[in-house]
Length: 197
Image 1 (cartoon, rainbow, N blue to C red):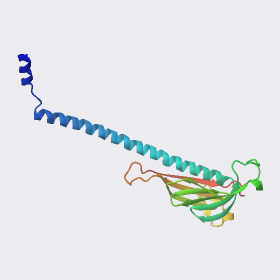
Image 2: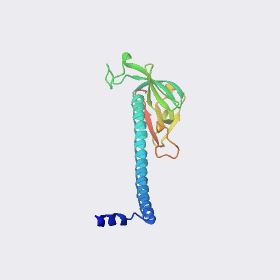
Image 3: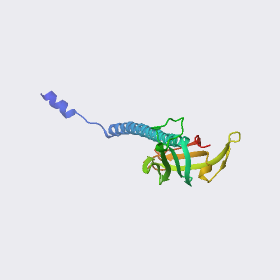
Image 4: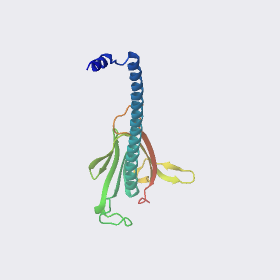
């Protein structure tokens, strides 16, 4: 028992130097872990927002192209961000895509940017397609020269034979200017209105 008391009295703790060394090593390890985690989070934000922006842009542009290709006539050229045209309903309920559109199948379609939202109005019902629209530019052509890749612009709805769409989108959620979540995508397409001679 006396030996046990001697051992207990002789127990020493850590010195201040040893504690400082351990605290420094642990601090460096934790700083490295936090840095790796932050870089991983930034890579995730960059990738996920990049995919979101590209998918939104692609989906909206594909729908616009499909609608315009089947347009029967252009009715209004409101501005470079506003276009109204007449087309067959999708998916051609009573007529086949290779036949002329029947009067019962005709609907009016309007694409318009309001704020940062691209809206599609079909038969008077407005549906927001995508948000985060930075710019939408529609150029209207009465003729196109494929050799020189240039066209003759027009402001007369009845003369429109081709439409060049350029859509630039960003993230729908707010992201700071220097943030990896602040992504943009620009896509362009030249659409020939097949049903307009």
